[in-house]
Image (cartoon, rainbow, N blue to C red; front, side, top):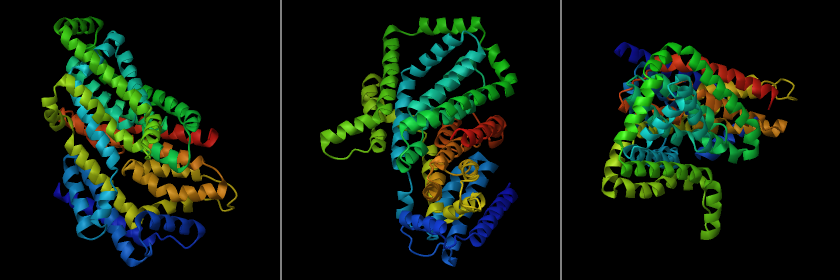
Length: 498
């Protein structure tokens, strides 16, 4: 194993050094736009191509690639690797620590902690077991109904709320199905994550990328309804059908535990054993979920009302971070205020939170040193037509580029790094097409690997806690083919529809 680790680190730094040294951004209109954006975002005033910058770029990219490589070797190494990465970035002076801290999406972290705590309280009240029973009732012993209903629920929830919240609730439902069937649920878990990511691109609120691009490019909800929602639904059908066909053996095994007779017996046992008082708490908890969904989906309207009432600007994205805590106060009255500390301690997947914070910091280091800008510049070099009169394959190239990088890097960091290129293209060709390319590639590319998106990382952490082990190999076995088909369809949509 030590030889593999040494080889991974050697390859990572060799590759990063070659890219940092041989890729330079020239003083052209496009190059100047990228460099100026880099300087505005990071505050750097030096050259992006001098030796000092090249050294920092090679170290930053090398550490990032090493972290990804070590994570691929063994998921157990991911925490040590990412902590080593952020430590070296700060100790070596690659990125000042105060800047590293600003590179974290703290709104998202705060929201995740609150959502996980609320989910644990609702789980303790029995809400997810109740929802699992309802899904089993609907399936009536049919694995097909159970599978497609679960994936549609994950897709719909991510669309109207966001991927981070959706995956917490859906994974808890998967756990309840595991307890009911006593079967390994890794296929269901990965399938629901893929459906969650697919749903998160349907509307702006579903994904940080959608929120970022909707503000940056002035993409309206109406635009999403016509250009993203239909594609998202088509891709849900594709991913659901593909996984169902490719995993028939697994689903057949699951079907043995979900015969109509067994399902009816389990449902009857549930209702006969639960007390009326407890069922009342469960229904109140289920009502809180509906309130939570309604509150999150109308956060823009709420922020506008609060802005008028308070006289201070209330940002919807920031307000969203505090919504779970308001509902925790209500749920805590049912759960027991004295047990809230226990819920925070046990409910929050703290290792995943720390891993995600660290990954954000490493992703920011790529932006800060300028290597992300260099990587993005390669795309415009390869895709810009010689005549300069048409967009050429720029949109499709950006989709593939963002999909590949988003499978290994934090997808929001990838999109932020590519934004100056897209702004330049928009100015040259008067089109917003490439923004949609970034959205499709950034979201769908995250389906390829366990670390491709927020939902993936959160799900892996929750699954680890339940002793459900998913390796890179097992993830790719389930996700590679359906995600590749999704990317292909998105490319076609990008060419003929957008």
